[in-house]
Length: 120
Image (cartoon, rainbow, N blue to C red; front, top):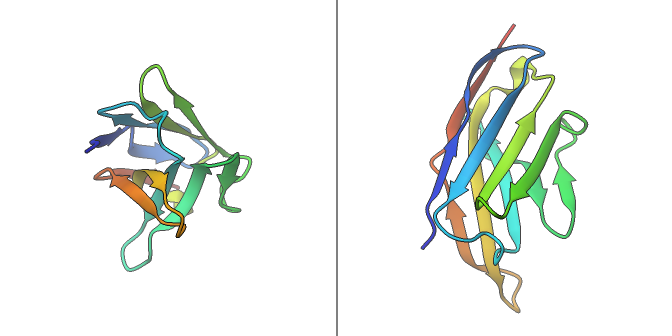
């Protein structure tokens, strides 16, 4: 079992920056996919950025957000620049590993989330 703890959320004005951190209780190098998702009330959780056979970003954050991992610290980061009010959400870290023949993951861990609020 791997525990994920997110931090770095908070209140920021539009145009500002935040860096989210996701600290894992064990090595992340053995996992296939490391991602950040976000969710607002009444909406489904959406993928923001992922490291999986390359870097993947939602269209709405391309050019503004950067996902990267520090293997030495077992931490996944999300650097968020030029923040907009529509980026307001709870952000969740997710790591997956143990890809099966059927295409599912044997290991699938989530953090509890960190709130990001962007004001005008």
